[in-house]
Image 1 (tube, rainbow, N blue to C red):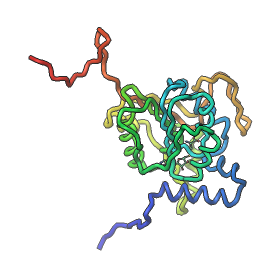
Image 2: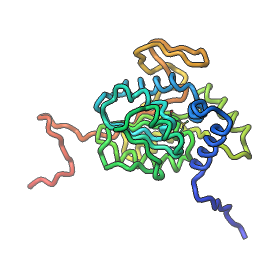
Image 3: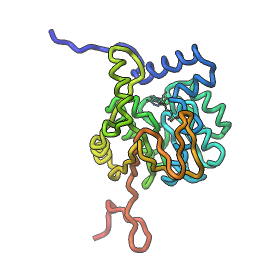
Image 4: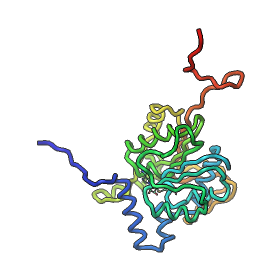
Length: 269
Ligand SMILES: C[S@@+](CC[C@H](N)C(=O)[O-])C[C@H]1O[C@@H](n2cnc3c(N)ncnc32)[C@H](O)[C@@H]1O
């Protein structure tokens, strides 16, 4: 009889693989080094670039931000010095969350274990959501579930900014080669996504058509020069390496008198 292979582990792969990844680093490295390597290194430079990108997309001191896959606080510790609005960081690894909370020094901010592929906040309540190098570790179906819930929590006009890997960017090929070398092993997944999939998902869920930025072309306006540990420098404009997608939840149309028009309103005949 034909059958399906059944995975009987209780946690999804993204939880077990990332927890194992962090545990191995913690066993073999100094804690600070492990916490920085666990999310890809270049802690100061990439955190700064992520922050500059969010600011260029409209994040301001009183915005509310949900940072999904916040890791060890690479972005949060940059934001913590100037952002006054509420911040929620979600991740699946408690050690990373603890580190993020410690270095960010913002007792008013929340760092929580992700409850699944959902975000534990009210509908239409958040200005911006970031997900840097998160969907790169999820199956497409898992990403889609997150996108649906992100749409639910964003206020009309709110934005999701996320990074992704794609085949059309030559510098992403080395990641695919790493995947090829890792066939048959159990490790962290490095998922690629296509722009047409992102466009289709965005349209089915209700987002406006996405905007994209190539990962290998500087596009992030910088308030200062950035130097990576690799020696690469950015002046004026920077790039994360991964490509970036920006998805906006549509705002209701304003009328000529500045009053919001709800097209579903029942009007007297
Ligand atoms: C490459 S790191 C990026 C961390 C952070 N966004 C940054 O740019 O510094 C990916 C993070 O996603 C987290 N992660 C993986 N699956 C997740 C999920 N389903 N929900 C929330 N976080 C997840 C991992 O634990 C890890 O901290």
